[in-house]
Image (cartoon, rainbow, N blue to C red; front, side, top):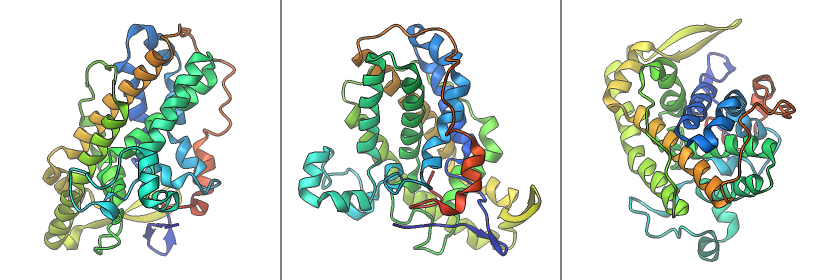
Length: 317
């Protein structure tokens, strides 16, 4: 397994966390507002739960070896460019061609999304409201990850091109500065007749953008190396981070790419939730808060405390 630590000054700290905790929570939150009235009451009443649980898959990574590959897929292990025409979209076919170990070693996010969607459909059929909330949040997290370009490449943190830290810059530092300026209106969720193909399309779009993500940062560094970093106080610690000036210039060069990927993720998450509900027979969902919800594993402090122990890639969230 690959472990990526972001080192700033003399200690390791998380300059940024995958899609950042903040971005993952906001993505799940806004996805709730894409749903039809038959679902919206339940999701709106429990929106704070779904928002907080958005980071639960990252929390599991420090205790579960199998969790890390669920967040990414190395398309460039199989393909050099899009469209993807070597790697089969269907798990059984891909397993025959490459073997299960190879697939897991290089990430399984699109296939795992389909598995979680199936589990969510079953939870809706069973009227298991706790599981509906947990699985909706999990599904949102994985779908959001599939929309991050650097979740689709072996060079996921620029470690192969001397661009260490770019992962956190793109998916955490930029949203930290600019998320409040984004327009999150994406319209109404639609039923997905071919959810597998829909998520693979998202993966292809992400992979097609990863070269641009890397090239623009590399070109900008050559011009702004002297002001690329600055220091900020995070609690009792002073940390080295990407400067506001560098982040602003990089964000401008990306031409709203981060906003576009976030909006697309919000829309696809809503579509997957809606599709799971339709496939479950459109069960009636209560328009009330689930007050006995088991929230033991959703506390941010758990993840923060054990961040250095996370299994698999760190920096991929």
